[in-house]
Image (cartoon, rainbow, N blue to C red; front, side, top):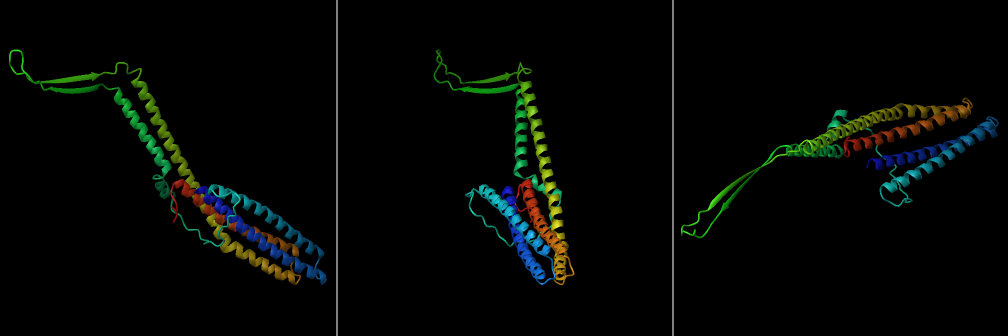
Length: 296
């Protein structure tokens, strides 16, 4: 499930990246038209037209690369979900863009104790302890007690009746060669218990590490996403609009306008990348804890 969710979000990001690049293609087409009109009226430079066309070509090349990556992610996702590899997989385009607070590390550590991976190691440890206890018992004397009751019928040769009889048997099984057999079995079972303890500790460390890393990645991506959403993108967009107005009246150099728009494009891609990385971190957190929707 973690793999499916991670690939799904990667494909979602590439869809948003394609939308962003195509939107910027339209903008640079408009820039080209504006630059061409200014050049035709003698208020602009031919290099501005060529620069706009160059940037538009670079965006087309970027679109081709992103489309290829999107196809690749779609194939992987189909394989993970046991669907035909080449089947076209359409994802939702509108999604709620909120990243909520998560609980503490210790909260998820406690939840993970009931997860299947740690449970498996605990069961293996209990089984190893059971085998050790059994081996230790084999080293002790084994007492057996038996009781028989005989119901005899008929008479004795002298004519008297035959009495019933009761017999009690006590047996002791002593491990004479304990150092050869039982002690070695105990040593082997003790080693198995130690191995199970170390394996359990190792898995717990891995789980705790995966939880800590997922929470750290989520916190970083969430802060970046909120920064882009609340500050960087609005200010960058305002800068582009202001410079475009200035270029129309020949107060802003066209190269600076192009740079501002390219910067805005990169910020938009980083905005979606931060959002997707946060969602992927939550998917890894779910896998580490062993539960679904543990952050809701």
